[in-house]
Every structure is written in structure tokens, then in C-alpha cells.
Amino acid sequence: MTERHPGYRDDCIFCRIAAGEVPCFKLYEDDRVVAFLDINPVNPGHALVVTKRHFADLMETPDAALQAVMPVVRRVARAVRRELEPDGINLHQANGPGAAQSVFHFHVHVVPRRMDDGLAMNWALKPGDRAELASLAARLAAALASGDA
Ligand code: 5GP
Ligand code: ZN
Image 1 (spheres, helix red, strand yellow):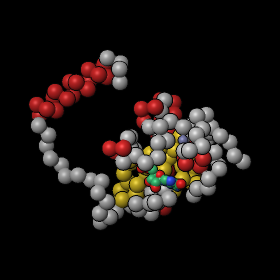
Image 2 (spheres, rainbow, N blue to C red):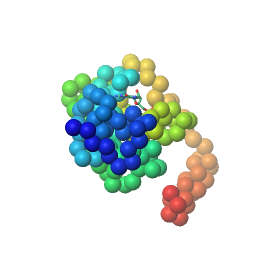
Image 3 (tube, rainbow, N blue to C red):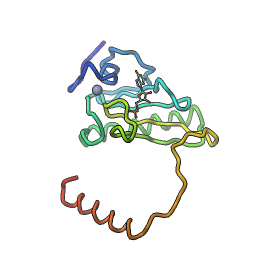
């Protein structure tokens, strides 16, 4: 049965998947969240956890929706760990073109990793400049305290 969720956009592939109008390799669903395999997996078991309602990105997604998503992310990660025994799992969530977001409907990637998979997601640990860290921390903490963020 198909059901269009609030904010449904017919130009959004994840709205259409959430509505059951486009097929997917579904792993799980409840009234707020659907999880399915990414059609272009970077590694076997690469999954997406998606809000059923349309929110373009993290900034647009209300707390209640995020609170519904994260336990599902963990359950999917547990299933991936149990079934595929990866060496590790990365979570990935992109916002905006500079972050290579390609579907503008909130989702979290669950990415199983292998030691030798060569995926360019890791970076070398290089200590930051402490003065720069201190001034950025002060700026960001002030933005959070002001209630604007
Ligand atoms: P983003 O680039 O926004 O972080 O991630 C979007 C992801 O959605 C991509 O990894 C892409 O492979 C996946 N994707 C795009 N279209 C479809 C689709 O029709 N079905 C499925 N299962 N995944 C899709
Ligand atoms: Zn959508």
C-alpha cells in the first residue's frame, strides 16, 4: 500500500521510496523511518536510514525526527555487524553540495568498512593550531549559547 507522508515531493526519490511508489531493498520501516540498501553501495551492506517526512537536510529536520532516526541507525549497524562482520562501520550524513549531498531528503548512511577498502573517508590525524581551536570553540560555543544554533 502506498502512503504519501507530510511534505511529500514528487521530484524527491526518497519521498517516493518512503511512499512505496518506487521499489527499494527494504531493511526496516516504522511510522517515521525507513531503512534500505543504497543502490550504489560503496561496500556490501551500505544502507540508508531515511525520515519518511521530507526534510532537505540536517538543519531542517526537527529533533523528534532525529530522535526516531538514530535508534534505527544503530539497529541497522548492529544487523550489518552481525551479518557481514565488517572491520568497522562509519556513519555519514551529507549537507549541501560542498559535502557532496546528492539527495536533498534527510538520510544517514551506514557504511560497513574493511581495513583495505581504500575508501577515502579517513584522514590522517594532524594536530590543529591551539589558538585557532580556542578561538573557533569560543565562537561556536557563543553561537550555541545565544540560542541561534
Ligand atoms: P548523498 O549523496 O545525498 O549523501 O546520498 C544519497 C545516496 O542515495 C547515494 O549514495 C545514492 O547512491 C543513493 N540513491 C540515490 N537514488 C537512489 C535510489 O533510487 N534508490 C536507492 N536505494 N538509493 C539511491
Ligand atoms: Zn523527500
